[in-house]
Each structure stands twice: as C-alpha cells, then as structure tokens.
Length: 125
Image (cartoon, rainbow, N blue to C red; front, side, top):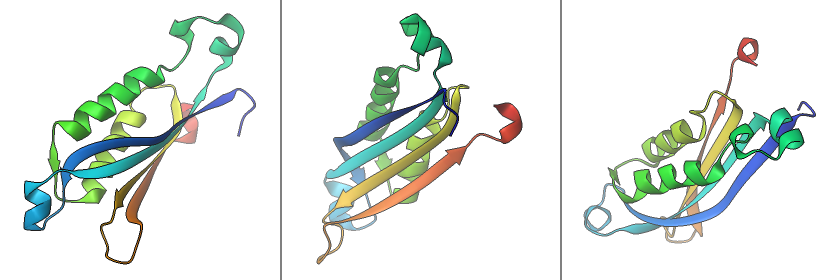
C-alpha cells in the first residue's frame, strides 16, 4: 500500500431488504449487514482540509442504502456486486471490498456472507 493511500471502512451498516428465493424471503424483508472497505489516494485531503479533496463516504453510504432498501434481490452475489459497483465508481478508488452478511440464513450458522473485491488496473493509478 502506498503511503498516500487512505482507507475508508463502513462497518456493520444494518439494513433491511428483500433477498432470497424461498417464498418467505420473497414476501418478507430480511436484515443484511454491509461492510465496505475503500482505498483511495488522499494526498490532497491530507494537506488541505477541503471536503472537495476527499472521497465523501456519506454520499457513498446514501447510495448503498437507496440501492438495498428500494430493490429486491434473488442472489446475494448480485446484491454484493451492485453494492461493490457503488463503492468503486469514483475514479479515485484504487481498491474496494464489499462483504454482505445475511444473518440466520442457515439454521446452525450465525450468517452467510458474500465478499467481492474491485482492483483498479495498475496503469490507471
């Protein structure tokens, strides 16, 4: 990791959505827990204290909330990928990771989770 890299962590964002393929999952919203990690070059923000020089995690979080609360998903893979697209859409983002937990999806497990990652090609740094 380069020294000018900043890491944003959105931890345990708890939302409700329609996720799954079973009838009760289609009919009832379920809890999901979202964790996002974003790496970006924060050279300007470190030295300016200017909001325009930083990646706005509030804006990213609002987009994720709107996606999850206003849609229905059959697959955790699709939900995770669409969330990752939001987390990685800004051209400053060098790396992003999204993990989404679906609590109580399996009888004897705390949760099932899906994690997907994005890595900007090296020539675009």
